[in-house]
Image (tube, rainbow, N blue to C red; front, side, top):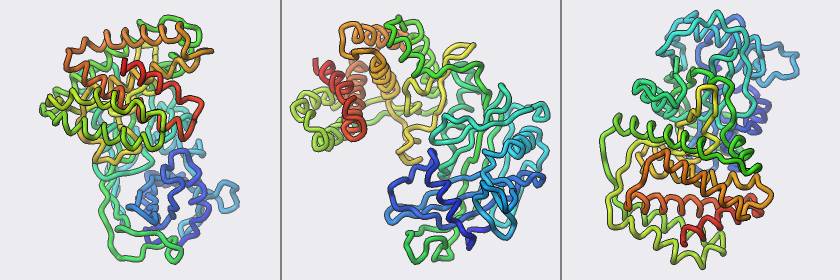
Length: 448
């Protein structure tokens, strides 16, 4: 199986394009090539395969598949090529368990080279893989796939691959080494360098082959092994339940704020202090507001007042640093050991280069504040006095746990809150019009 593969890719493409982790829906993409790495194990055979997807507009994208050997007569066969039949290994418990044990136990050569490239495993905290008894795919994931190993470990299989180090690994490792306890411990990571087709625009004439002989070396991260947090409860659902019953959530919000503050301090210590022109940030926010007004007419009358929220940034240089980048209640888990913060890859719709850029820590704070506001949607009347009082108390407790903001910092936070709520109005207008009052109410409150 090489990236010049002429195998019938129809079944595999149908499987990929319908998957929750495939982000190219609606863009006219085509599966144009496959590149298989050397098998992790040969009995049963399990291998990582890189699928190159081309689009009529924009660059190619690379997605990772984990395939296991199958019989040609099996109903779940996705691909038949010169090497046999293949199925989705995440639906093959026996193959999945053997693959996981091999990675954890070092039962494979830690560096395997093949004609199309090589993969390697870095072990940071060894684990006895022979003790693992079950491996099962977690069904709630979207942008990646998590494999749960007993009740102790998770292998996070990255689906959309981009050049360079994966931020989730980088951030977790740095925070582990800094002694931060509000994140999971990373035990190992899997990397690869693989030859993939050069830039290609998909067309009807070339739906499954690369029209040029250019091969690029894609160096990327394939997976990470992290501890499975004990008895985790989804933070979003937890706060929605508290909001629905109007139960005080202040103590929990305060602990999440303190956990985020510890993460920000550690990330700042791991980086070089720098600042960004406040004018540059204000201009970007104002431009997004201008575009949003074309989508949501309700914003037009608010535009002058919202611009005034951005304007104080123009008089300052804004400190920036590595941040979470996509912080909300869904990125938190309540465990037996307290609140934990997960998923440090950043906003999924941004490019890897954009996600690696430093930003103000107040962007993360604003993301959580907006998420707490959305939790009131679980109440019978999100706009009732009682619901809004619940939100204000949760917000105040979160900010108290995070740490008091100075006057300048309050201006930065307000700007990021408004920017986030503006984005939300566009999203709700296009996807959930019945929810649009949630961000609009927040904008009216920010205006004062």
